[in-house]
Image (cartoon, rainbow, N blue to C red; front, top):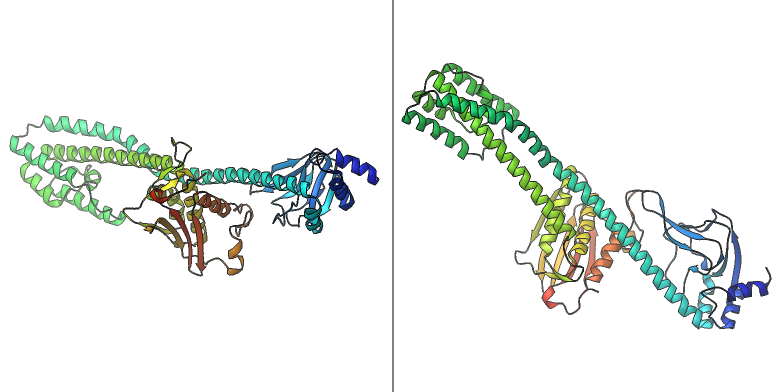
Length: 470
């Protein structure tokens, strides 16, 4: 293609057509026309962005691999520009820029950018606006992706936490029907035994004692077996049926209680009383287990609702930092248990509120705490502190992991930088954390050494904040 033809095509370019003719001529003189076949990579993630690319024909896309395979996040067609822009700090793209069809681009080398800024003022203005729009697009896209990642962690943690109480409800509810039937039958038998008022009072006294002491320590299997054997021996010695031994061993009944009951009742009346006490205690125990498990589910749902800030308006408002941290710990505690990590929190009782968006701050906490849990080994330690200091709330997340090497410490907040294996980290979490904290007029600091890494987030208190997050 001759210079005249290239100049005509550049003059007809959607983004360049309004430029002075001399600036278009400058592009034609310094640009290099390139022809790409489908599948050709214009710029790879591992390479440097060569310069400004003016798309004349075809179709370019950028793919980013975030662990689940390449995903298209942006594309360019005839009339667009991409690549290195004036005043940009871009070195390498976040992913491969690939030609989807036969494509023609004019590339102005980045080494010529300084001259272009001096010679092409109107072109520079246009390209700065393009760069800002591109930054907003990437930020919005990756913030959405990071929210989905956080949602996945939330769902996994919730599923794990819900499993135990749901299983307990199913198990206890299944046993409750049979136990209720046994309790009803035992009550009828006991009622037909013709107890005197004094005998009935003795039975009721033992029953109430069994129901009143529900705070028994958990016995080991061996201790429970020894307890059951002891009760079985007592039943045999007192000529009572041993069928109730296992059920009685699950109650707080003592040998002294059994002796008192045996001094008042004999034969079938004693058997009926023991059967009824065992069955009735089991009924109450199972009912209590269902209630406790249901309460646990209720608390988990409340934590999730608080974590996601459901039913909240999308405007800045006072945020309870302690409540947000509590809710975040509730959804990550399962991961800590899985690694036998000690996860504790210390906070001021009168922690003031900050002004902002609770859901976004919870995303900050989940990213920082999750990273800390990843950093420590089995049996590690992660500690959170939240204190009121001056006009700010300071939240610290500390772990006793190996620390962050000094040579990469300045890069950990950079987009797409990650130390995790491929498929386990996007390199976006800490970049999003930094952006969200800045959005709340706060700042984040890092101190790290082997055995102690601390991320410290400082946020202005709500009643002292002069600027609201925008």
